[in-house]
Length: 339
Image 1: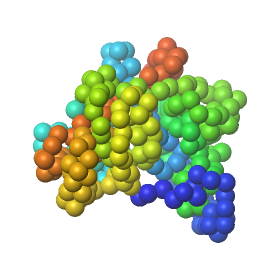
Image 2 (image 1 turned 180 degrees about the vertical axis):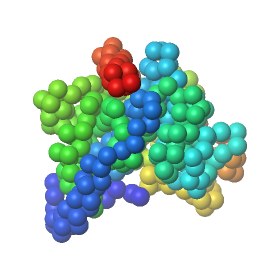
Image 3 (image 1 turned 30 degrees about the horizontal axis):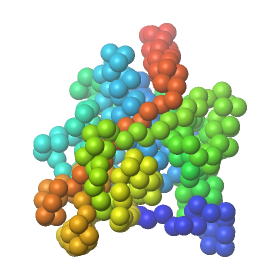
Image 4 (image 1 turned 45 degrees about the vertical axis):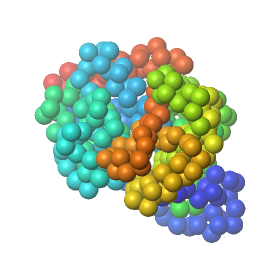
């Protein structure tokens, strides 16, 4: 879906009219979040966000996976597989599956880390454990109570924050903010903006970890697009951030097209993009997630589509590593004490 503009402005008439629906939605999600979950048998670290739409969960998940590997852990990512048709549980195979099967984010991540997709997260956790996971990294699912989460790392964009602070559909929040803050162990603020400062202060006041991070463009991606005029397109939660990242990296973005998050690209979409690129003598560039969703249909564009890759760089990486190690030790010590 494409986020309505009023979600990111102070509550106006339409938002106020939707507040009663937001109260009902918040009551239901809040009740669900407090239900007891099932123990997975291994530590579960959840990477989530407070609101609908993108905030940088996928780069954060991959950064967390790398930390766990550095600690000699065997992480497996557990995802619901949003946008995919397979209910699972199933291990994602990039050679066999498409984004239509398992979702764009799981398919993209599966190129570098084992990923299990399951609508039922309890079944998915069981499959991950059977495949040798020493730690499960839950991609999204912060508001889902099915599996016990031993630590929750929330990702928030520093420019957008929590929008107007209202619960869906009056705003972007998935559940009342105080309830979500209460369950947050660490907050990763991406970017240099100030819109998330209030939330960060609340997390810090509760003793939670607050970290600043940046999305750093991949050197090879930047080099490939140097001195080229491009048409950039994206169907992610915040396409404007992607376009801004391109420009700040020195890429000459002559034309840009934003689509709704997880947009299913049609033949007409691709034909239109190809025609615009040809008429302007432009190269096509998109995100890794979008290119995963386009898949083999990219060949129909008549020219290469560059995927602009980014990685998460945490300003105080040592504090995040210590946090992860402490959570793993805490969970295992508690389990040992009970046995």
